Image (cartoon, rainbow, N blue to C red; front, side):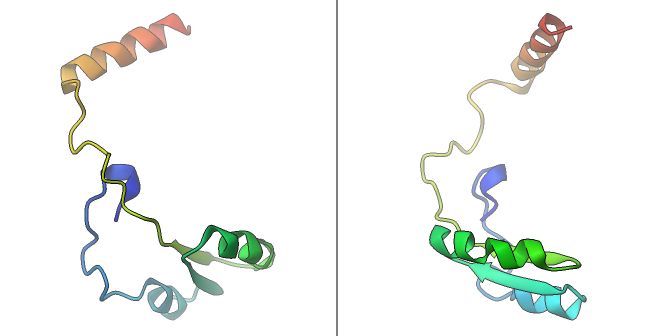
Amino acid sequence: LHQSTGNQPLPAQGVLDWCAMASAAGYRKAVRIEEAEDLIEQLPGIWATDGPVLVELVIAREETVPRFPGVPMAGQVVALKESLAAHR
């Protein structure tokens, strides 16, 4: 799932091995992490790796994320402009 873009399913979800692809592409380290505790445990080794690292984080889908924003795009643009103008 792409959490940051609204929980859309990934293409080839469950078929593609991201870590194997990263390793084949020359990444020094590629890890798949499913639990927060494992991330905390593996961070020192990840940070110590010299070269590119891929970290595949498995997250749970949030059913409460709205598919579309409640404010139309034009309203979002106006709100952004007003917010930016207020912080000049």
